[in-house]
Image (cartoon, rainbow, N blue to C red):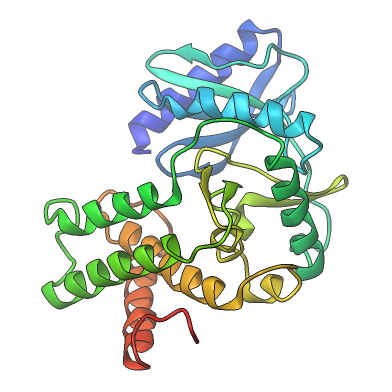
Length: 283
């Protein structure tokens, strides 16, 4: 969020917490992008704040409750208040339990894989409408096609990225394997190492697709510990995820630290893959 908007967002979170009987004298920003996540003390609650038009917040609360009930390794909503979306001053706010990180802070690959498998097992028991993963690919394609939103993306790079998103999306969608409910972005930034074990956060990107699409967001070492994975589909998904993330890093409004550098590096990886013979599910 922009600085002025972030100040208002934090004020809205504090005001809601206080109105619910939670002491919120101090604020620590945990994450700041299209929405802001803060830790409020001394009540020790995590508040996720987004503009009021961010209707995904209601979906995220509903899904988080269902996943927790299914035994999934996920962060929980704060049990001291009603599990719902709160609105204040043009923002929607959700309140979550703070899970203190524990050493070694980075989840080992084998534990990461087991947590992801448990998440997927629980998700198979949850019936909730979500978009197909190809809808997220299409969002990235529209971003690349919009010169106003990606003004610094050069012509050859734009064509390369558009081709990658189109061809890889089609390859993965047509792979013929099973599909299910997915996290959508279970990368290391969305997995906490806690005293309760690894816990996933941030469910607004949930979609439907092959499990390889989720595994592709994790470090490569994690995939080697996942059972029942199609290695060729995973390879295609990894490059597809690279293309999607690269597209987002060229968004003029992107605030990810080091985002433009990541955008350049992503283009290099895609170009290198094309140089080795293009996109193919056969290795």
